[in-house]
Length: 236
Picture 1: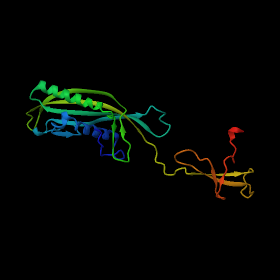
Picture 2: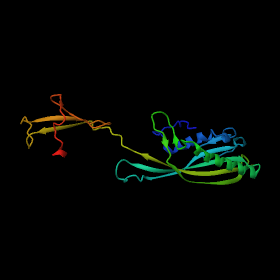
Picture 3: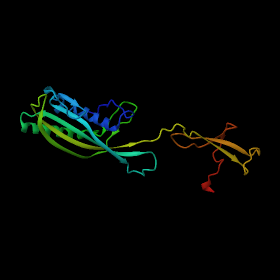
């Protein structure tokens, strides 16, 4: 059910990954997989009689605002997005009552995507974290009846449905000048006199992950300075 969406978040937005992922899931549902003649990611532009039934999932609009967890001016930019997707299911309307029931079944099948345990998760190619939906905030549907085909002589019925999905993005900076080492000069007198002979230089390795270092290294003597060489100020 949770197939990998081929586009990746380094080139495309989460919104298009979600849209393509939902369309891929609809293609696996029995109600659609054996009967739908045409699938699309844009609005309904069908001209041929042979393209019915039709199912489309398309981008409607998107809005975002600064996420509520923290101040907007503290830390890297982070946003709360609301994505509105449109669903279109079109059938030939030879029998209006039957068409209405068919479109209601299609609408209910879309809701049953929520039955999956990981309905909110969209896997992408290796090397990227899955895209996660936080929730669905609203939705709507209506039915449209009209004519289509090359000569506008084909009676059609369409389910027009929308859902709004919420997700987050974070934009941490790419740090190219990492804080890897810190040099400290310890002197016995002040003002500092490089020629006084009562100083030494210590270089701290700053790990990028894991616990802080427990010792420092003398740059000149290349030996470990014992722990406790610098008294803990909190104990004085």
